[in-house]
Image 1 (tube, rainbow, N blue to C red):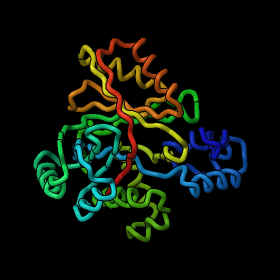
Image 2: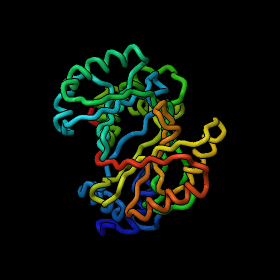
Image 3: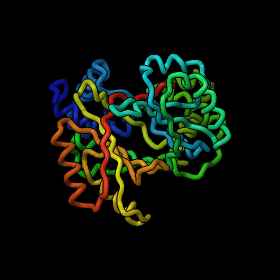
Image 4: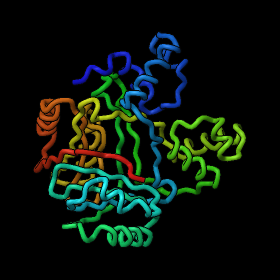
Length: 310
């Protein structure tokens, strides 16, 4: 465990975890400290690279599907990014893990035809260095708060992405989403300048995005490497039924070290991800799962890196 943060940082993080746009004055009131104290603490966390920001968007609401590409390759992250840098992709996430199939790419596409085109262009650039490959759909991801870090009771809310019916998104909404992704902490004044919209229109557009469940939250992320946090993905197999899967998902949501739960078309029945400080934290989570639910098989992978390439 690291000593570059303390209990005050944890309290502040618990309040900005899903709302980094909350005012420092409001945070100060909640933790009973001064506004300058909160501003100083958040600024230090940012300067040290302990936290960064990213809007949590449900792209399925604007017609996108989530596709995962799993490959085995000897290419490094930098080499892979260099190969793909000139592709005009909506978004691509990369996960590197300690496993034979060491790279996972998550791509957004509006339907199978668009993904087919993306996949062929992508594979054309990588095929000479790809040993094996696999593709599957992600149906739903449950995003959970990091209560293992701040230990705040009553915070096991969750957000879901990937499984919503698409709805109409206006030109203003699309423009605003793109800017928030590129510049998560952009000010209202800067938004006015870049969009040409007045503040009243911008606030109304943001409200519409929230009410339509497109923009779900303003998420603050932790730098796992700096904090010594270990990231594992666990694949489960069990006697499957829709009811048993729902029970298992609700059970996993109660475990403080579980931060993502994914429903997908992959070969396993369900997958979830943990963040832990020690091996014992992970072992205790797996032990509790075995005690609480009749799991037939558990497969564990450690994640080396996770981040957005584009």
